[in-house]
Image (cartoon, rainbow, N blue to C red; front, side):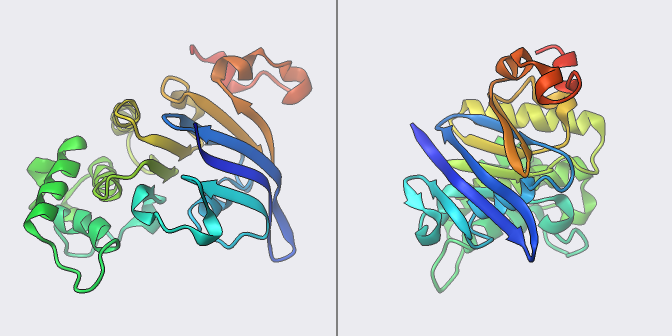
Length: 245
């Protein structure tokens, strides 16, 4: 069952074409790694799927709704690039940061209730950060801060989790733990769309790869990707295919 449908999407920033005729679909339970060089349109495509950027050409349907009229916002979790995701100098506690993920879905008055506190605890438990809930966010490591951002995205019980370069600026050990966490969340039923440059690790975790360079060069499994004629499609043996699946 497709829960994301992208059809004929093209997009320009000013006069610069960023995406051209991109078409693919994501099934429920997929873990998609969206890869490509800098400036290939990965973040732009992600923001179109989230409704952050307005559609120009083509269509996107999420959970059966056109993104232009989308209303199921609590069903989408979003973890932006670290620099854009959180001001870590702001004197907020971990539980207060996670609570922001609930407040955005509430009508006025925006009050955190007892049931909400249980949801906050549950989200923190899923990312193994409950013991830090009273800690200030600026007292955590980069990897721990990213886990808090995931908890913030999870607290509204999303069906789909979108992540944009989430491991930028965190150490290798934390990156491995981070990808293990994403795999665990995916196996629990959450569909994941991950924008990343980290091709060295994602093949052990994702179920599908989307290779983007303005156009969609490839969409399918890692095995299918490496079965292609690399010389014809990519001009070299892609680094993803030098790694053990």
